Amino acid sequence: MSEKKKLIWLGALIAVAVLVWTVQRVKPSAGGGGYSSFSDIHLLAVENPRLHHEKMESAQETEYKSSGRNIFTEIAPPPPDDKTKNPNNTPAGPTGPELVQEPPKPQLPAKYFGYGTIPNGTARRAFLTNGDDVYIVGEGDTLLGRFRIVKISSGNIEFEEISSGRRNTAPLEEQSAGPAT
Image 1 (spheres, one colour):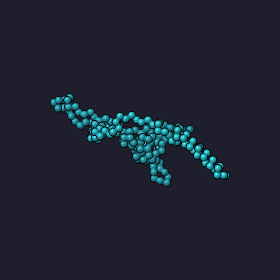
Image 2: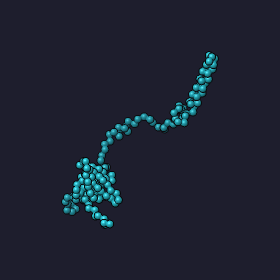
Image 3: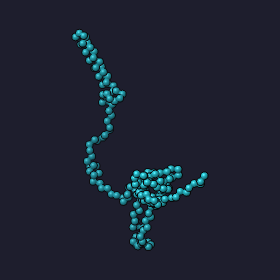
Image 4: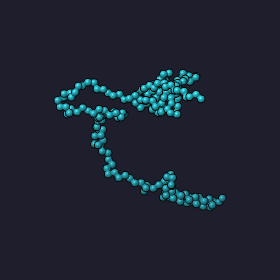
């Protein structure tokens, strides 16, 4: 190839490169990977962009004051005593220890009908039924996502409701055999 042809090819390649560069600069690619012009940017309308130190300091000086309610329980605290109802500060009736009603113990929605052990281990498994469903659980397993099995014994099963931590036991229920055919 002669020098003249090489220069012609070089000039043509430079012209194509300049053309591609200008097209890319004017029109951004659809994939967002190309260069784009800054005319597309819309700034937020902020009246005063300076920091408001007085507002920040007053927010930092505020102190949290609890209302006395535990936000992690759904049981509301008792209302505060109102001293204006009884201005003489004399008791309205006989006072004594208040009876606090304990929430009911959780009930297992399945019947405990048997237990067994794994042949090569000492882990005991409990068999529970709820209608047509049969559950096989071990100590520490969860049942129906709500109950944790604490202890399996030959007479009963001890379980704990996961959400509240309350415990209860369910007795072993004998299953009657069906009619012989």
